Every structure is written in C-alpha cells, then in structure tokens.
Length: 469
Image 1 (tube, rainbow, N blue to C red):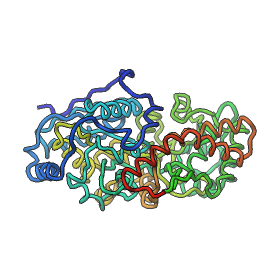
Image 2 (tube, rainbow, N blue to C red):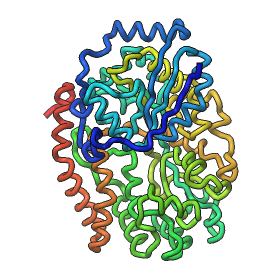
Image 3 (cartoon, rainbow, N blue to C red):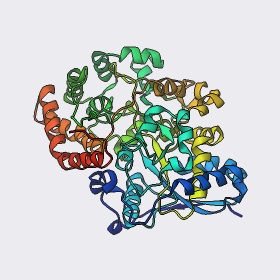
Image 4 (cartoon, rainbow, N blue to C red):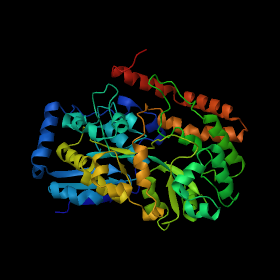
C-alpha cells in the first residue's frame, strides 16, 4: 500500500475563502468557531491516546495533512520512520501557499466541514486559534505530559487564555538570524566571520558603516527595505502587554529609526518587500546584500532563493545590539471535525514529539525544532559547520538564541500591527518626518486599525475568565 500521496493545490476558489484581511480581522473563539457539535471528551481523548501508544499497528485509515511548503518536504523526509511504526495509516499532503492555506482552514472551521485532519498553523496566526472550540484540546490526548520537552514560549503561544486548553503542538522556532553575502562583504573589505560581523554591526553607527561600504545606489543595496531594522525590534510580535496596552517605546528605538531613515535617504535599500520576486532575484545575484529572518530562512536560501549560492552566505546575530528574538515558526492542530483523530494524533506525536521525526525534518528543511530533546539526540545537526554557509554553523547560533527568547504576550492584533511597521514608516519617511513623528504616526495607525480587534480580544479574554477591568 502506498502510504503517502501529495496533492499540490495550485489554485484556490477564493469565493469560499476569506480574504487575508478578513482572516487577520477574526480573533479568538469568534475566528475559529466550528458548527460541528461536540468536542473531544477526556474519556474519548484517553482512549485515543491509549490506542496510539499501546498498539500502533491497530491505528489505521486515511488522513489529510494541510499546510504550505516547505513543510511537505519535511514530512516526506520523516515519512519512512512514521510508516514503520504506523504501517496502516495513509497520509495525503494537501499543500498550497501560506495565505491560501490559512484562508481555506478558516473557512472550513467556520463551516464545520472540509478541514484536513491535521493542519499547520503559522506563528502569526496562532493567537487567533488558541481559544477556539473548533480545534481539539490536545490535553485530552495527553499532550500535557509533553510540556517540559518543548520550548516554553512556543508552548505558551498554543495554550488557551485561561491556561486550561492546548490547541496546538509547536513544530519549529524561528531564532532570528542576520543573513549576509560573505562574497560582497569580502569584496568591500569587511569581515566575513559571523562574530566579527556581529561586533562591527553591534551599533547603528556600525550598521550604517556597512551599508555605505556595500551599497552602490541603483545597483546594490544593503537591505530590501529600510523599514526592516525597525521591524526586527518587534519581530516576536510583542506589541501589547497583558493589559493590551500598545508598547512601541523600546530601548534604542529612536536611534534605530534614524538609522532606517539614513539608509532610505542614501539609497541603501531597494525599497521592496523582502518576499518579492525582485528581492529574491537580488539575494541570488548578490545585489541585495543582507536580510534578517528566522533560521528557517536557511532552507529557503538553499532550496528556493539561491540554490547555487553555497559559500556566498553567512549568518550572524541581529545587528544594532538587538536582543535574541524569534520570528514565526509553525504548529500542528487537529480540527474537532476530523473523523480520524487517532491517526491524526499519531502523526503529530511522531513528527513533533520524537527525536527521529523532528531531526529528519530539520535535516531536510531547516525547521528548528521546538522539541528540545531533538537538540541533544543529534548534536552534529546543531553544531556541525554547514557547507552552504562556508563552514559556518548557523544552527549552533540559532540554538543559543532559542534558549534566550522570553515568553511574550501575543494577541489577535499582532498581524495587523506588523503591517503598519512598513506602511507607517514608508509614509513618514516620504513626508520627511523625524523618528519621534514616525513612532507617533505608527501608534495612531495601529490604534485605529486594531480598535475593533482589541474589543474582540478583550471579549475573548472575558469569556475565558482571564480579563480584569
């Protein structure tokens, strides 16, 4: 029996999917409320957990797993090990782009049918689902026993507001790294060793020094957009405190904004989105010299952006003296509407809560495991030099960063707030505003755009008994 089939969805019927803005505008229990009746009881969950553990060969059937690339490559890399333990489960991967996947998932959860048995959820969206009754409470399946094996801040993101439910198991982290073209740095007389690069760029003055050295206005640029260094300050999406006060004032934020303005005014950025075709082409050509992202970006470089770039890239800690932080990462959930929760839970447990599953996927796609036993089980994956990075070891740096990332307060407003980091900066820069004026503009823009979302978030917290006036 063929254990895995792959369905690549090239187009989605948008008439049955919510727009990205609508999805970002839905929160808490309202965003992911299923019309399906009932939820998995403790007794049902215990029976599922026992079946998965006691007799894996008895767990059978077909499940769909939905997500976005390169998650499918990760699952395929670990599928042989999964099939060995669970020979009677057939897995179909239904993968499309990130936005379309979340649109379709949202629509299916709202309708009460049509969702995959297991679904990936990107870190930007997890706060919209953490209080949802449309997703199985994985604690009923015994997930609570796994808590100490996962990085704390990721487990916290998947836990309901009242602390009672767990709607997702963390897959990976995004320890944030600064990626740079070592060949261009060397050409310009700059250091290429990651520690030396980090030291040189540890101040905003040093960042500007590098920007000037590598940039040829109109031909070569330091960054895709000058807004990104400011975005790095908020990259873990910690815009609001527990009282939902917007917190934009950060140590060194005005110095950072001034550096961003200097980069823009000197023509040292492309003024394009980092995910655009123009940026991708420039990374590969060496005309956009650097970008920062979660460590999963290593896999993007190797497979999608610059597969011929081995030896041309390095990875260091974030510039500007910014602290260790995280960008993104993904989770796996089981919708309550799934008709085969046994097989779904078996899939999640093997892929995310075994060292074999996690490390097979990590080796294939650079998704840094949130499951900490994986780090010790195959230390060579985390410490060995990487030929693509000229013998540097980005994973060792990522492990160090991952251990230092604090728990933060994520909300359903975060994705909307994140978008204004770019638009408000660009508008302020175009208007010739000062850093103080740009920060003030950003605060007004986020407050206005998130007013309704904030009320939804407060109501969700009230419903969970986790809000005090």
